[in-house]
Image 1 (tube, rainbow, N blue to C red):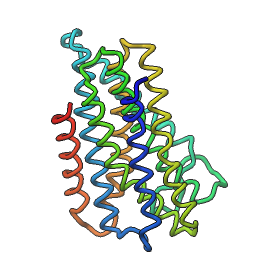
Image 2 (cartoon, helix red, strand yellow):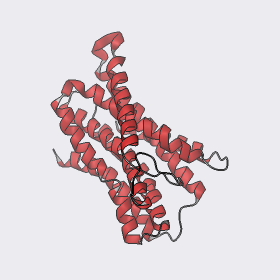
Image 3 (tube, rainbow, N blue to C red):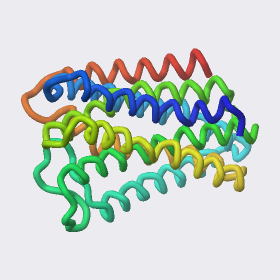
Image 4 (cartoon, helix red, strand yellow):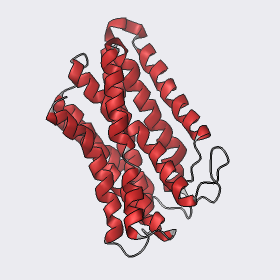
Length: 260
């Protein structure tokens, strides 16, 4: 694994870490409208990445199947959806501004379950970066080094506000700044781990790359619809989340097309 690939896998984690570090510089919790804007931005990046960086390459990879070229993408997509649905049910977690935890009953602290909620969110992002780099390394998909880096940068950009969104509420829950930063940072550690595991798996089963690409897309879109869209729309009506969704979508689309 060359240095460029290692850098690409670590960039999203760096984005989360830098965002979590905001807890050292900001005295209060993030304003509600700002949180909605950042959540909308993250959702836009993830939807655009799912389409341009994952689903379209998956369909292109299956082009030899003719009219049935959609089959691997549909199957992989549904496996991604069902995988996140399973994790949602077996791992106790607590969404921001929610009083009731999801998943099985647990005696875990609120702060721990807040971190677990964001960690669940980050798993598909790590898988997405990993599978795109797997396609690049095997040379079996229409994926360039620049295209893989574009996805890593896009995920890192949307991870920055996510890091702040988790570390600031942890601080509000009573944690000191150091522990709040650590919680925000550790919520993103699953990304490089998931990326490496996905690369190893995809490299062993090269013909299955279309399934892996669409699997990551399904997992990411599950997070967008189940978590991000409700969060950016909750409370008093505002178009701020929708506008920043469009901004995030545009940024990721530009990155993928310009660099890919």
